Length: 399
Ligand code: HGY
Ligand code: MN
Ligand code: MN
Image (cartoon, rainbow, N blue to C red; front, side, top):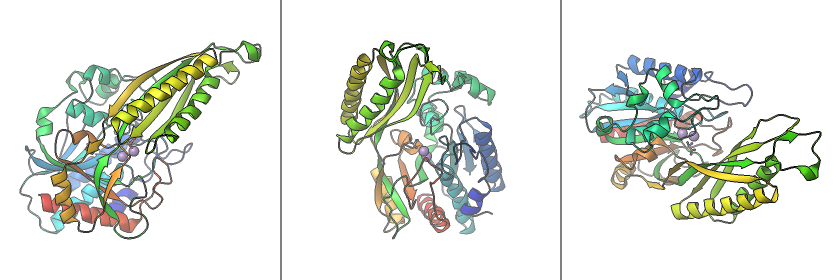
């Protein structure tokens, strides 16, 4: 059986993005479907029984599906131009960990499942961890069904085209009952592990985080015939709003706020836009502070828009409170990984969504630069191997 590095190497060409660099593997697009098929084949090679549930979550079972099982896994979808490890490292490590457990002759006392959650990044339909949010009921099913991708396809239509029945997506108490403990291994998205010492850390918490859409409306017009004094240009307002987002967050310790996506409508070179949509990602350990941050940003945006003869609206698209992983499970994992540091993370994960419903924990594997959501994301082979061994040790201790 392949090692974790060989498993990752076997998918290294799936979904390469020649324009952005890195990988673009949006949910239910060809590359992500190819990765799902790869996962199913790898799981079946290991004698695992594979099923996909009504929310599109894939479960590969060692032992019969049962309540209270031990579950590990992550996601295969990526951000646009993402790295090779965010998601796939957790899935490949789980497959490699199964190999290690079998080679150790471990006889599980309870079933083990390796899972792949769809749309963790929210890159296609705009809501992060959509699969685990549907599973736990953390998102209204009508809102979920009507989410649209950039081409206007609804999640319901795309899910249907990929074998799901959109009428049946939503909270799945039977599937949730099968998760006795959930452990997700993930590339570290930061430099908490630094350059020396342990390559693996145990997760403690996930920063509260949310996504908001700001729509700035002005007067669309001709770029050549409209004098500067006669313009209500939403692009000029949006540009100032992006800076205001940075300035507002910079004043608040531990806050992070980002505008990573901005879409002018109609988006012509010789056209003054009529509208500019921009998406805000804001995070802080204290959910009340995040709310104040959004209020301050929206206040500044309204002022800026008015100053440009424009208007602006704000819509919350998703929000996750700060999450603390299960203390008892994390403590047990710490005992199984002596010397592993404990790290908080600023990145969201399915483990964070599940944490409100089942005992949930995370392991992080060193990423020397800490860079993620970028082609430069990296994990050294020896650290990836150490991660697979650590996951196997944890699973063995919990089985
Ligand atoms: O956005 C996040 O924090 C995660 O990578 N989905
Ligand atoms: Mn991830
Ligand atoms: Mn990510």
